[in-house]
Length: 115
Image (cartoon, rainbow, N blue to C red):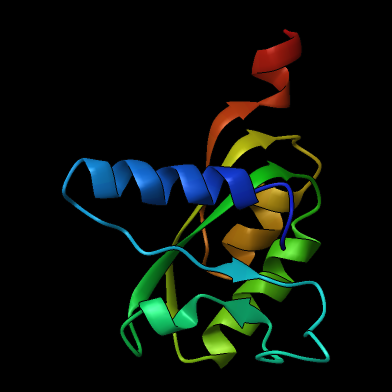
């Protein structure tokens, strides 16, 4: 959910635009705002209804937060096709996600980083 991955999502979207292959971005809030759109998902107007999306996370530990994010995204009618993280801390998150049918792709694992 919003904060740690926001700069990563923004960077991917900006670079894709500069490369002439734009990928729209959205964020998932921890709590729906009490004002404004009142949505959990901000930026969903940039997406085609029912489209497949990728989720980008900075760090995955137990996977609980990502399961909540997946539920919110899919409750809005989107399909999660990819879940990517910079670091998998290897604390059960990848296994929990896989059990739900969402394999986690990690750039680095805890083991790789600390040997």
